[in-house]
Structures are given as C-alpha cells and as structure tokens.
Length: 253
Picture 1 (cartoon, helix red, strand yellow):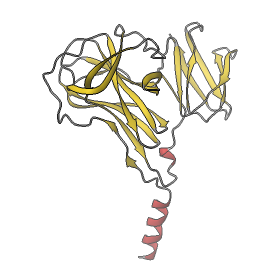
Picture 2: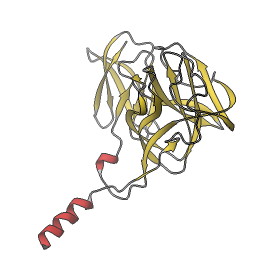
Picture 3: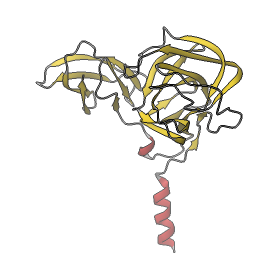
Picture 4: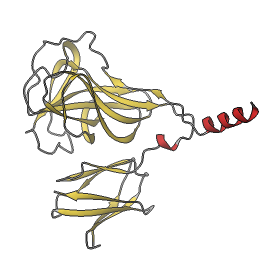
C-alpha cells in the first residue's frame, strides 16, 4: 500500500492544476437564433475581458448548421479598440452546436481581447443578441481567402450586438507540468505577408534562413508572441532559428 501511495505522489507532483478561465459566450441563453444573417466577407467581433493570466487553446462558436466556411481570430486591445492580431484559426465548416478551432497555445495576460470571425457566405451561422446596447462590434470588409489584417487600425464600429463566440483558456496553474508551457510555434504556415511567433521567450533573438542557408531576416521577439513581416521574401521554404537553437520551418507563398 505504501508503494502505491508513493507512486501516486510522484505522479501528481509534476501535475499543473488549472481551472477554466474561458471568456466569451459558451451558451445561447438570451441569444436569438433568428436575429439575422452574418454577412460574408466581413471580419467582425466583440470584446471580452480575461480576469487573470492564462493559456489560450482554442477559439469557439456555437453554430447553426449552415455548412459555411469560417475562420476565427483574436486581436489584443488598445484603450477599448482592437489592436494587433495575436492568432487565427484554419478554416472550418459551421455545423450544429459547438465548433472548436484549435490554435497554438499562447500565454495571455489579464486584459481585454477581441474574438472575431469571417464567413464565406451569408447566413445565420451563429447566435446573436441584438439588444446588447453596451457592446461595440468592430469590423472590416475583407474578401474570403485574403490574409487577415495584422492590425485593426482601419476597423469600423457599431453598437448593440453580441455573439456566441468564446475562447478556451486555462489558468491558475499550481504545478510544473511542461504540457501547460507554450512551445514555440508559427502560424499561419504557409504564409503570405507575415508569420506569428507564439510561445517564444521574451526578447528572443531570431534569424530567418533561406533553403541555401543564407540569412535573410533577423530580429528580436517580445511578449511571448510576435508578428514578423515576411512580405519581401520570395516564395519558397525558410527556416527560423531562435537563440536557444530551436528551429522551425515555414513556407512563404
């Protein structure tokens, strides 16, 4: 019996106990399923507040089975308006009920974040609340398939709506499970104009090499996630190496 207890203690000693700190609307209570269409070719969303630091795992919506294609994204906040793109999902099909779109884990600080989505067709894809008078919706016109804007500087707003979008976030870790520590990752990949580095150490130097080993871009990441401009690179395969010698491959479209 003692051996079993010792083994159990060893197993849990490295476990990170977390709690859900999800932000957004995880159910459709108070929302209308027939309030009107979400229009195609508009990236739009609303703000939610994260009360404590956590790790973002996925972006989610409650779908109404329209079979439309959707992409979701998160922008950080600057004095109540969306600011910089932090992460985005791959395209997926809107079914009935929960649609969970994974993203590479990102460490988020407490604060405001904007959950946004874009669809390829008009339709009642998710649930809306058109009586949310205190809410501001920010949006921009964007053709489906076009790269999402790196910043929201040109976005426009209107009042009075809320959506059944939410972010899956874990927080309150008390252990040391390395699975909860974000690993360095890149997205999108392939990429056209920029790549987002997620999970990098603060102020990590990096060098981008072409397939022949030539250094083409260098710089320093910050804040655990950085937006790197690769628009001037020619199409092809590249490698990005960080100061800890970790190396990732990406494709420039």
